[in-house]
Length: 188
Ligand code: GRF
Image (tube, rainbow, N blue to C red; front, side):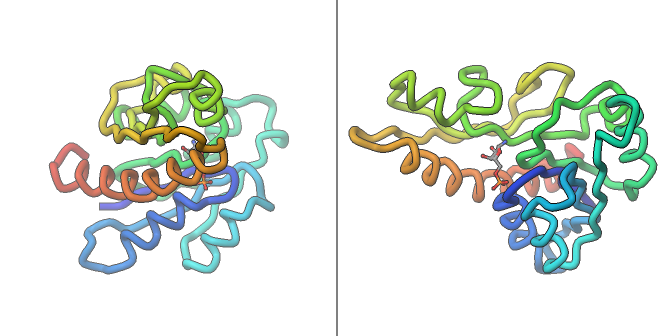
């Protein structure tokens, strides 16, 4: 089976996927990285890992639909698209091209704390338990059917940076494991 990963920034989750699926017997091939910023660190990680890179600068297109059409036309055939820190809301062009085939990683326990700052929002709210969610993507923001969740306890005195480190460590395990499980379970 094959996947494409969409990411916009650091790419630590992209790297976790690369490492998890490095062995040919993992049964998963990462066929492409799609990135909306040519200079993002994740692009360098993909180059080092030998993963083909598709960069799409949305500003060069008249609208989101045109940018997404460009992505769809460049993407090789894949069984699953994994959004790992892709900082854009998907529109109908991509959603229709991959129905029930796109998943997203979110650094909080949805439906609590959707949006770009889920870690900080949970920490500021003062919750004692937050976590990580992997879910199917629909037209909403961090909505869509939940596939996997893992809780992270916010210990007394934890700084927001401490919490972010814990959340990311959990993400790096949960995302590859969930991709593997979806594929092995024949869901994809
Ligand atoms: C992750 O925390 C993910 O949950 C969120 O964006 C972050 C991406 O981090 N959607 P990285 O680029 O994988 O390091």
